Length: 175
Image 1: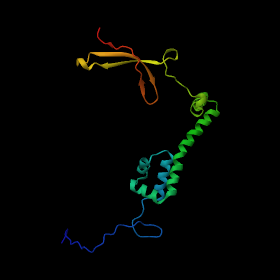
Image 2: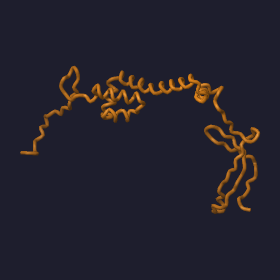
Image 3: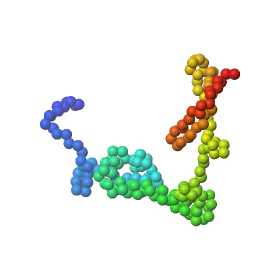
Image 4: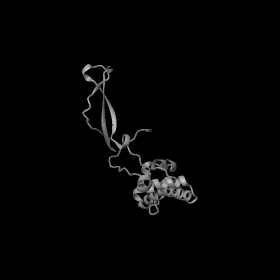
């Protein structure tokens, strides 16, 4: 009978084995020397895992399984990823050696920050505190045209903006 068969409960499901040097039978690995070379070239050029996997023409599972089984390959990937950073660093050094003053300044601003970084202070006139005008909606009238403005000194930090109450009376937006 075509298309119909009996399932024998005693049949054991056998998953395909991978072909290795010690096991010449089974499914061949997708991680061939050619695929590994494609992956290495991709990582050498700064590719992400996703991009390298695509360029290598393999599945994500195949890549990560291979990495788990071959820690030296994972270490090699890390080394290859550092090559573009080193190349960029060498380009900067070469430009500085050729006398590029703008590149020299850029390098010093980032590498010797305490001495060369451009600083900008956020202060008010003559170094005094900044003054902000805070405008709030007056809920008591239920009218969005009724706004209240208040001028207060402010202290700005990196993570938050703190507004200190100066005791300045609120002025209404109506005249």
